[in-house]
Amino acid sequence: MTIVTETAAVGTDRPDADHRSGAPRPRPTWLFSSTSQGVTLIEAIDAAEFHTGTALLASAQAYHVARLVEGRPRVLRPATDGGGAEKDLPLPATGRSAVFEARLFDGMRELRWLHDRDGLGTAVLLGEDEVCGAGLAKSLPALEAIDTIGTRYLLWGRPVTGTATPAGTAGEPGTDGWLVLADARIGLMPVPMGGLEPPDAARAGAGWAREEHVYLHTVEYVATDDTAHVNAAVVEERLSHLALRPRRQVASPRAEQRGTGER
Image (cartoon, rainbow, N blue to C red; front, top):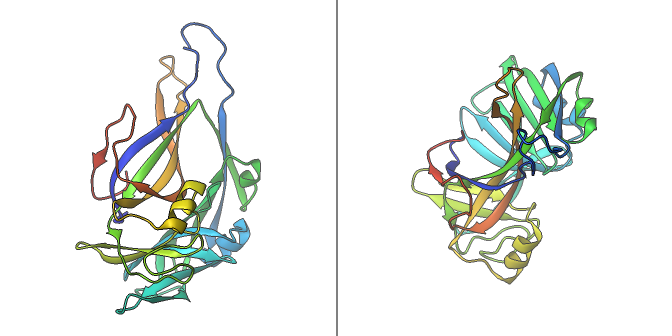
């Protein structure tokens, strides 16, 4: 994912008891999922009832960070005068602007779609709610995770001052508005900030600082294998939400890593 520049672990919910001590372990976290094949992206969104959230949409022509409104993606078209207008994003089945990979998330669920051929692809819905196991055509085996790790990815770019958004004043994202990020490598990248957490919303209303950055928060799921060694590893990751945060060192056993894409 080219919008990402570095990652950092931001928290963990590790078991309190060591498995070698014989002490009781906390209840595991379950990740439920289902899949559909031979469906268009719109069909997958409708089947999963993904009405609101954020969408990462990749095509041969562009990479969009879109906002879902009633199950349809909308993007901000920045204007040269610092303004902009929110517009529907067409989803053609063919051509350079046809989406070949999509990841949608709303904080609780993630919907993935990958194009196969002729505008049809494979969709996977996952989340910790059991309904995700029946949201699409075929249920997949539930994943039992012994641990979850909160991770965040720093998006390319810095907030552009003087950027007008549909729901905020110049340079300030409204709680249902947009924030435009700028970087020499990628140009301008509008990001929907409708999913601001309460502290973010308070800062957005009072004015934000250029030192702040947009992070993509995810949840990693740790599971063990079936061997006698009982090895544990991160086996799945679910996109969660976008957040506006100051760039600072995170208290974590894992140091921040710099790169050019998502792990």
